[in-house]
Image (cartoon, rainbow, N blue to C red; front, side, top):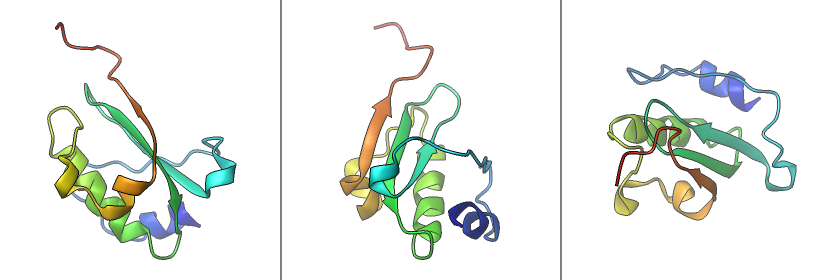
Length: 96
């Protein structure tokens, strides 16, 4: 249901929506992941399939607008602030 609701909305430029069967986070409702390029990957849970699609696309657009995937805390949708399950570093970590 969540995928269908997201798919029915216009995607912000540069985003791609990819359905997956399961993210194995069943105890925490609908779950989405944001990933791309050399960015950090984020996993967010407890997404309402009716009220959440616009918020997901807003957050995904903000994520896409960053070079590293790190959306400044104050710019994140409230749901993202309270429902982050995981933050995963890029596969190719920059040299520190």
